[in-house]
Amino acid sequence: MVVFLTSAIALGIVFLYGCVGEILTEKAGHLNLGIPGVMSVGAAGGCLGISLYMGGLSDTANANYFLVLLSGVLMSALFSAALGAVYSFLTVSLRCNQNVTGLAITTFGVGMTMFLMESVIDRTYFAAASTYITRSLPFADNLGWFGEIFLSHGILVYLGIAVALISGWVLNRTRVGLHLRAVGENPAAADAVGINVTRYKYVATCVGCAIAGQGGLFYIMDYLKGSWEYGIEAMGWLAIALVIFTLWRPNLSILGSFVFGGLYIASNYIGGISFSQRQLFALLPYVVTVLVLILTSVLNSRETQPPAALGLAYFREER
View 1: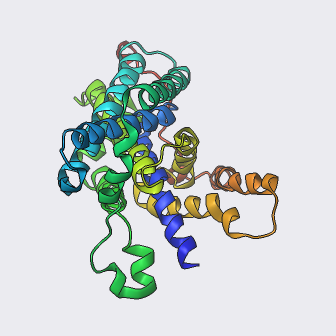
View 2 (view 1 turned 30 degrees about the vertical axis):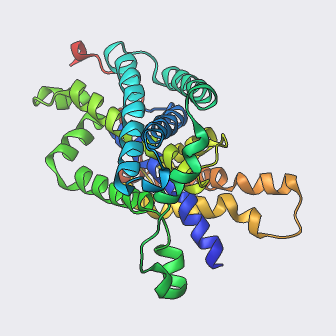
């Protein structure tokens, strides 16, 4: 059980980054189905940054922990935010269909990631870099099962939880969050009281994508321990489903991500089941999301519904 819970938390962080990033984007009124592509590009960008830093050292054993982490996080944020800027330009400035644009971003991001990983990035440094990124808290071993479950993870796990908590605080406790929610609910009314709708949409989408990209980096460098295995796209779709499961609340996404992580890997800890049955277990997060959708529709409470203007292009002339 301890191993299962530890693994569920680790995998859940992949979903958490993508979910929080998508929540910020959707709060601005944009449904970004490009999150799987954004997470993929974030992984490629982060791995590229780490590879460039490690490659410039005479001995990887002399690498600086903070520089390894910083090179990965910053490059991941840069690459994924750039893709978010492209999405913003197409859907905010040019008012392209958000669903079609998001799917195009996913297709582009997946293809670009495959090209970078296979032809550009030197993956020989991944394993060495992973030993730095997965370094756990020094006192975790002294706290028994509690330390193994909650404190034996790398710094990116706790960074993801912090980002979720800060995002929830900003959305619900600050003027910036109030303005952002106003843009997502009624952009015309927000515009009428002087809120720069375009700026909020651009910033929310780019920041959201920068956060989501960290999920891809975490998946490769922490969860897979530096191994290159393409499965980030599937993680991205689950992150979008998690947004619905947690009712567009970053704070709830922390617990929700751990639940999704547990459901996704549950079949690995159940003996005597076939491969096809294992695949059915992997569908459980989607099934749970559908049940939540049904429940929220029955309750019909405003607090459980998405932003009113989600997916709708805003034409300023229509005020």
